[in-house]
Length: 359
Image 1 (cartoon, rainbow, N blue to C red):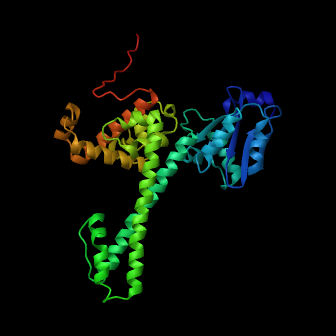
Image 2 (cartoon, one colour):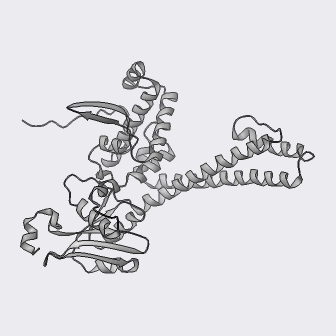
Image 3 (cartoon, one colour):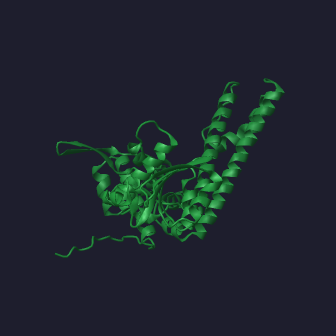
């Protein structure tokens, strides 16, 4: 295909807004690149070693690079953006339909190259270094919380085998654990008692590590203006505020608050045919961790608020409790997007209005 024939084919030939389009499949060691040479029309499909990726792009004319949103994608997006290129991150589900034939690095790179040029494709907002660092703290805390719960439940179960029981709650367990172990010294071997005592100390150390991470998250909250705005919303605390801003990436990547809410899976899924549309339960798409935090925050609002407002009171009067909780979580998600995208402080009682369309 020569250049004139390629241009006659439209955007699909790899030129958008005068910039050459490149599909880049990132990996651990070997990257795959797919593009079309606009001078000769030749299809270019080459492998690049990890150390040669930036060197390959550093002296090229600014181009539009499509990358599948996977591990390391945000890092490479920042690196390539720093070289003057435009980078678009694409969700894997948007790339998959364009994988033709056997799944290889070359077909993946070609699929990315095709997907990035499709009209209506929604892209993933690129996260900053600070946002990714904040998410690292959340992932570490989430892992430690699971470890603490597993270790605590295992400790209760092991002691139950020797007739020791405890009241519910972590406080009851650790207030009685030492006395219980001392009482079992004559019934079980000493090495078992020592091992169980070490497990109790391990759980306490995990709790201290969790607290240290929460202190670091509190420091991030105080240093970030967007997080402070979000934290002022009722039902949004330290964990939700820091996770929401970090997970969102670029707020402008979402066209509206509803789109952000749908991205979190807090809107009804739909099933329709023949012009009839049936609304089902919430889709539960998107980030499960952030959606869970919003649900917990909404439950707290319904439990502790003294002035629920007319909207919430009317909803509680006609809908089940769980439906009301999800609706409140969706409202919180929309508010989070609004204060972040518009750079406005939260205002209680604020009423949004649609812009008037001139006839």
